Image (cartoon, rainbow, N blue to C red; front, side):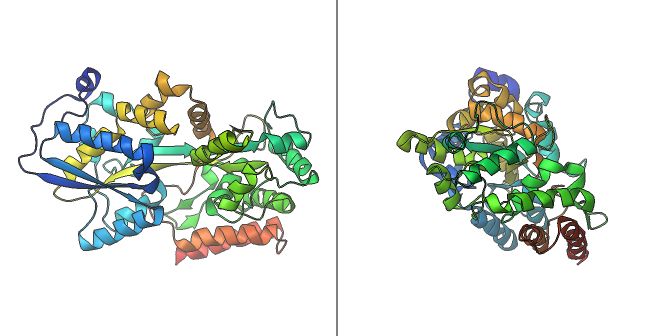
Length: 418
């Protein structure tokens, strides 16, 4: 194993074994575009500089890519033999990347690491990367447990006590109605995006009733449970903004005190924090209420670090493992206040009490996976579009929730059978 960190603590953890490469090696490292600018890029470059210093002859080039460009480039690279050596992407597209040959099975390299290194990571996050006993296709990187951002000004003007967040769906829905009566929007339209439909499902159901059974090629969704989910879309229909959770317009409504709630990942916090500094936006973030007290909704997922198969696989793995190690993830979390899959870094005193991280760690305990199971099979596009179209149709009154749930399951099973 190579030297992963020059600090005494990390040397003790990881050891210093292998010699530097005998010949020059250049690694291409693709990251999310947000991580290739400003302070995030500067810190990534620190990681690169540190790794290059302990691996003479290794050169690492960072390239920032948008979400769609990451996936398209990795798929095209697998076909043409021009894959980046190390790259980021979302957990939900992992199966597709395995199918096209873009991801190396890193199980043996993972098992060769010291137990102390492997114990740093969240066990469920590692399980998400490991569909079978001898298979592992990623290292969990940054991630999220969905939280509910609250515009405190909108709520207070509607006569709502903001000192205690709503504990149940009924309490939350009652607050939404008060917001509407005060002339403001309660929520974005939760039917427009697959992730917001999944998030709403999590208010009612659990993981056993969500996702795909790839062995039988059927959906796990149960009509009886899903009819209750669809009723929530009906309830929210007259109260929503008409914009999706991902629209810039939704953030604009929140910032200008026209929208009360925004259920989404922590990546919107920098925007809202800046608005708080610039225009006095008053907001906070809490767990998404569930149907009963103590239960919570919301989804979770991870961005992943993947390694391409090929002649650079070993050194690429070493770099990925270095980036995901505790010391680097503590620095990363401190900079971005973002949850990540290195549990040891999340428990570190320097980050554990950061409000956004503390709330995210708590949210992950309750949230469900977006598109499980991971790395078993790729979700066909028809699956996601059927889910969103069905939710929108029921919210518009084209079907009752019971009719919509029955139709959804039938259509999803047809989609999977094809």
